[in-house]
Each structure stands twice: as C-alpha cells, then as structure tokens.
Length: 391
Ligand SMILES: Cc1cc2nc3c(=O)[nH]c(=O)nc-3n(C[C@H](O)[C@H](O)[C@H](O)COP(=O)(O)OP(=O)(O)OC[C@H]3O[C@@H](n4cnc5c(N)ncnc54)[C@H](O)[C@@H]3O)c2cc1C
Image 1: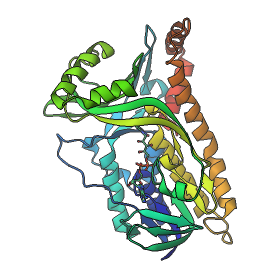
Image 2 (image 1 turned 30 degrees about the horizontal axis):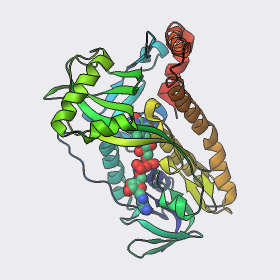
Image 3 (image 1 turned 180 degrees about the vertical axis):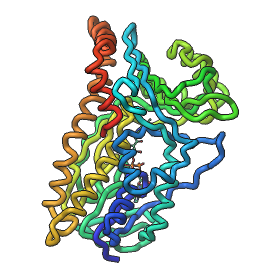
Image 4 (image 1 turned 90 degrees about the vertical axis):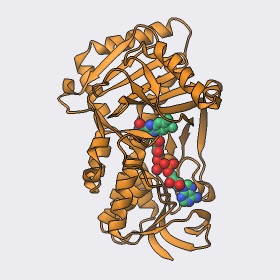
C-alpha cells in the first residue's frame, strides 16, 4: 500500500495528527495502530488517566471539530491553582486575575480518544488496526505482514516508539527514579474548580478537580514518588493501599479537602526526561515518541498536540514541488517546535530539581520565592497567561 503519510500510533497525538491532515485536505493518510478501548459513559466511572488540557490544545481540538463532541458533563474547568512549597511558601493563581475564564480543563484520556476516533470514522480515513514490526527507508511491514510505503512516516507511537528505534534515531532518556502514582479520590469538601499542588519532600503531589459522583466530590491524584516508595505502595493489597494512602494524604494535604478516600485502582507510570532529534530521513516524531517531560506541569500531551498542529501546518503549507517527507519540510517542523519543547523541558526539570535539594538555605529560598511571586500581580498575570496558553 502506498500513501503520502503513514502515522504510526493511534494514541491521542496520532489520532489528532491524522484528523488534522484529513481535514486539511490530505486524504492519502494511513493511521497504523490499535484502536483505543471503548470507554464507560457511566457518570460514576471515570477513565483512570486524566489530562490538564491547555488553551492552545483546546483551540486545536476545536479547530479539528472534536471539542464540541466532548461530553461537557465529564469536563472540569480549572479556575484556579493553589501551589504550596515544602515549608511556608504558597502561590495562588486565579484565572480572573488575568481576565481569563479558566486556566485549563481536566479531561479523561478515554473521552478525548472517544471523540477523536468517532471523528476519524466519519472522515473515512484508512486505519489499520495493526502494529509496526519492521521499517527501512520509508517502507514498513506490520505485524500482520502488510507492507506500507509513504513519503512521510510520523512516529506517534509513544515513549518506546518502535518506528523511532527501527529508523535508527537516537533518544536521550534520563530516568527520574520516580513513579507517577495516579488514582481518583472522593474528597469531603468541594474542590471549587481549584487544582492543588504540593511540592513535598517525598515528591510533587497534585489533586485535579473532577466531576462529582454519587459518592461525593471527586479529584484525580498524581503523586510523583521515589520508585522504591511507589513500589511498596503499588505492591500492597487493594484494601491496604486505601488505608496507607489516606494516612499519607491527610498530613501531605493538611486536610485541605477534608478526608480523601481512594475510589478506584492505583496506577503507576515510571517518569523519565526524554528527547529525540524530532526528525530523521522521511520521519517526523510527535508526542511522547519525540520527548518526555516530568508531569508536574501537566504539559506532556499539550506538547504532543502542539507537535501535531505544527507538523500538519508545515506539511499542508509546503510548496507543491516538495513531498511531505522532504528534508526542508521536516527541518521547518523541527524549527517550529524547538522553543516550546525546550521551555517546558527546562521549567519542569528545573522545578523538579529545585525542590529535590534539601541543603540549607535552598528550601527557605524556594519557599520565599513562591510567596514573593504571590505578591507580584504582574508576574502572576504572566504566569496565568502562560498556564492557559502553553504548549
Ligand atoms: C502521571 C502522568 C500524568 C500526566 N498528566 C498530564 C497532563 O495533565 N497533561 C498533559 O498534557 N500531559 C500529561 N502527561 C503526559 C501524557 O500522558 C503523554 O504526554 C501523552 O499520553 C502522550 O501521548 P502520545 O499519543 O504521544 O503517546 P501514547 O499515549 O503513548 O500513545 C502511543 C500509541 O502508539 C501505539 N503503538 C505503540 N507501539 C506501536 C507500534 N509498534 N505500531 C503501532 N502503534 C503502536 C500505542 O498502542 C498507543 O496507542 C502525564 C504523564 C504522566 C506519566
């Protein structure tokens, strides 16, 4: 089979790239990858992964026609952020302080996947529910033995990208020796659209606002714990996990949302800082296949959607005599993404390292820094605008 573009990986970034290309008039696109699993539409059951979606990602999803397909009763607006240091430091960011209606939206992975796959079916795009097994010089062979040739191959197949490896592209991966432990919790007090974050000695803890359930108010937890600590927690039987977690969350959150109760399974994701060259001969990398960042700023998927948007723009706007995989087109893509990726990488990695230092006076300085920023309206406005716009 011959196509202009093959997108390898049907995660959120791969599906969004395929849909944006199809909507831009490029119908000669093949999406290669297993389709996402069907999700529950029950209002007491939520997909285990949720994402903070930035303003620019929201605009992109709107531009490809899927934002209006989301079930808005499952989407939560983040109207404010409360960030606390490991001592006295505290920073409050409220959307209205920069005349914004919200900072971001919290959406389940399954809900975004649902609307993207629905839209792709409407567009009738060729979707091979198979995986890439072999690849050389813009020709790939799938697990089921199908041969595909394309001018441009897009690696959207995640952090362990098969296409990136088969194409021989390097990947610099630095493990954080930490695991992002995620779970949904019932909380005693309403979250009021606030996203909470604590920079704790054992790791960064975030509670993201979610829709209420019949059990009460709901938040989604992301706690980046040292691998050894996370392994102990994840290895406990479910009933002991709930007790252990409730016991550690009460002091960590200073009971800010009252009692917190585990309402589903705990999941763990090993955290790494990763970077690829973004392009290779006839290959462009997008999403986690291209880079990975610490989740403390909730920007990994937003970066991936920014990649998809930029790639589709340079491919659609290329000169008629250039193929989609021409080195000139690919270099434009890499150039467009360089700054956003570097910024998010530096900010997330820098913050993570700053809060890892225990040697005085660094802990005092970082807490004083948070509280100082809290007293500077102009800096706060810039931070709020940045948070609602990135990546
Ligand atoms: C704890 C945690 C919290 C996070 N929170 C946020 C957040 O709030 N906001 C945010 O923006 N980001 C967040 N992220 C980052 C986000 O999870 C990732 O950046 C995002 O999921 C990457 O999407 P992707 O489509 O690039 O890759 P993936 O979701 O990994 O998708 C890859 C796809 O490729 C397919 N595939 C794999 N191998 C092959 C093959 N050989 N052939 C074909 N297909 C293949 C897979 O089946 C899959 O569908 C968080 C990450 C973690 C760990």
